[in-house]
Length: 391
Image: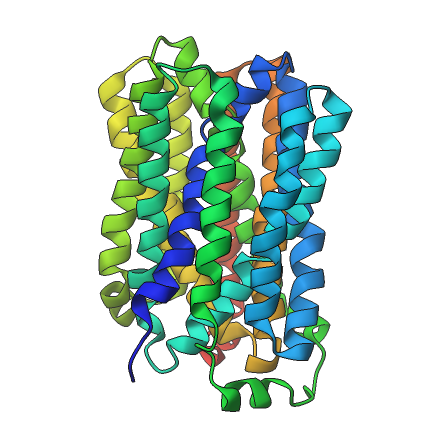
């Protein structure tokens, strides 16, 4: 079967380039507007919290209509339209309104696009990581390029750069029109025997989603404050950008090998190892932020804490949920992990940062991912038959 490789890769490229522009630098932009750590954490939590509601609304519509491409394209077009409001949002509550609005449409994109990609790869799902890696390439180019750029120009130019990338994403989103075949869409409209809730309450799926939630929560201090943390220890924005880029470069190398790894190692085991490595990463990030070489080594662990964890999770969602609930399964993964987990991580790390210290926030993150590893291990041990049935 011929795979529309470049069409599928292009949306990932620009989608994650936007994250490469926002994750490392949006906190710096908010700081430049005079917001304190608690406000920055709350704003980032709000942005992430929309993943709890928005993906489920969009995915319910997409699953019922089978129009994954149109839902994704609608989100891609309306995201930059709403983002324009950022240029006038210099007060906290104005920024709350604008970020909530554009992120509602932004969160229509990825769950639908994951379904589109997996449907296009039918029978070759292990090649997902080879397409998804272009998202990491986009992230690297954005984070490294903007890190260099922001050493020479004010951080107030950041929204304009983000808007340009959003417009590019909106344009390329139409390149995937028609990649899902008509027979697949017809099969999708078949009425399911069980509602999605009956799948979400299965104990092993609950444990899986709880582990995802805690893993994403543990990334809170990293995604929200890592750049500010590094600046406090004297790193330039160019170096900070390169540290971010190194982490994602390691992720790209992992994605190149992931299709082979998934054929040899169970996705559940990959998740467990990734969680344990996350605990190590966050603990030492809090201990040795002033050591450039330690930071280099720890950034390489992003290959596990995001790369292998995400690829294995996508594979598990595909196996754990039937085709008629594929969109809502992806939405559950996104909303529980990146929504609830990401929001709690951003908000909690802001509070810990404000009232304790940055170092403590990373130590709490380490404990959080360790608890997630324990939950997953106990589930694999006590609910073995359910996990085996999902293979």
